[in-house]
Image (tube, rainbow, N blue to C red; front, side):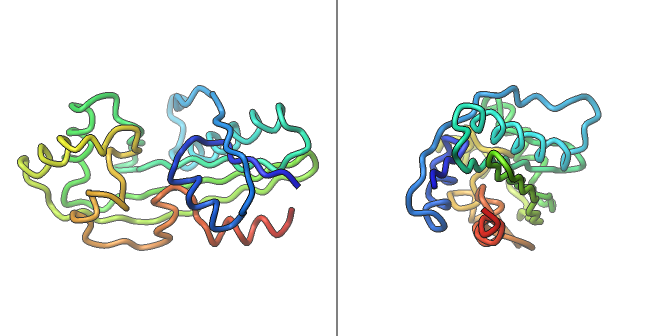
Amino acid sequence: MQYILASQSPRRKELLARVIADFQAVPADIDETPYPSEQPVDYVQRMATQKAETILKAYPEAVVIGSDTSVICQNQILGKPQDENDARFMLKMLSGQTHEVYTAVSIQSKDKVANFISKAAVTFYPMTEEEITQYLLEDEYKDKAGAYAIQGLASKYIQSIEGDYYAIVGLPVAALYQNLKQF
């Protein structure tokens, strides 16, 4: 059986390797713009589903795994920052607050689909202007939902996590393993 991860994320590849030894990573080129008034949980599931559907069309005999992670603060989707100012805005928003992280997964084959969402709550310690500036100098915020990677330099600002740590990193390993048993 051929497995394909519909992502180019190094973190997702690393996590999937814990579940499946042999797979191919093929990024799905889709429009990731949220619909007006789309709820965050609906958005993240739609993204994961569209990624898997897109790749399955090109590889109809494969089992395709699409995944998307969104950081939600004050019911606002904090996607990948457009630039350093956008990242600064996001980090100020997260500082001293608890936010939600949703990772949706869509596993698809020609005759089966399994969708699920893993959720976690992350609380940041308050960050000073200086700490935010220092963090931004490292460029870790680039290409990261919410402008941070929990497994990276931002870890020193994390007060608590409630839920699946791997969902925050980008792929809920145990839930994925359980769902893949259907395939």
